[in-house]
Length: 294
Image (cartoon, rainbow, N blue to C red):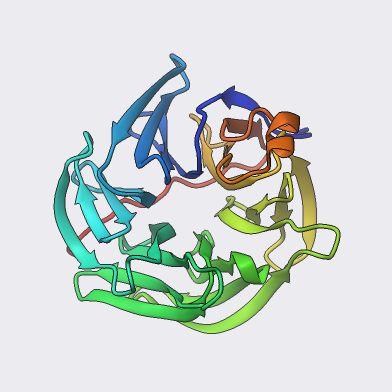
């Protein structure tokens, strides 16, 4: 029975995010937003590779023809497996001096669902977008930090959080059209004592949602009806996102952050920025591949 997360590798990320398991390669990709990197971790060998990019990279998805779809500061791009920017698919339509793409993932049909962050932390100008062959479409606006994108196993529910509002929402999702409707509050977080708030998330094969709580030092698992089922400690103050991987998809990986944290906190949690993992009883599901023709 899982009791908490253990260290996998001290990747020393400033802002580790978007862990993504490649079934084909049996490796884990994850980004370091502030260091403008995509990391490639091979559990079999323990090797950690690095792909440097010219811009901050908030999120990635694996593309069906190889390489990645990625949300950068300037917009959504196709990127080669070596980090070459191949083609810009869509501009970031916001003020790029205070906005960049943040969390996102590929939907069950192969579209890219990704949101932005309002770096002023005051104006609520971020949005959640859908990108497909028709272009960029806004799903939700007036956000502070778009996060937590994940889909139920049948694809009919979209999860999405606004981290600085301490809120996790659900939408009814039409996989055929990419339309998200009927937004509902799924869970609310935080208190005067506990500042843990929902960052990146993942859904397991039973349809339960897992969320990393930034400044909360733990990962929580929620039933589809919104009940809190369990929580598991992470040996850092700021876990950022989880994803399932491994040959049986029962390894839950978790990234973390060190940037901007108080000196005292970093002394207490010296593994801030590392990659962690925990075995789970219920597996996750492989992530879909991005298809720019959808």
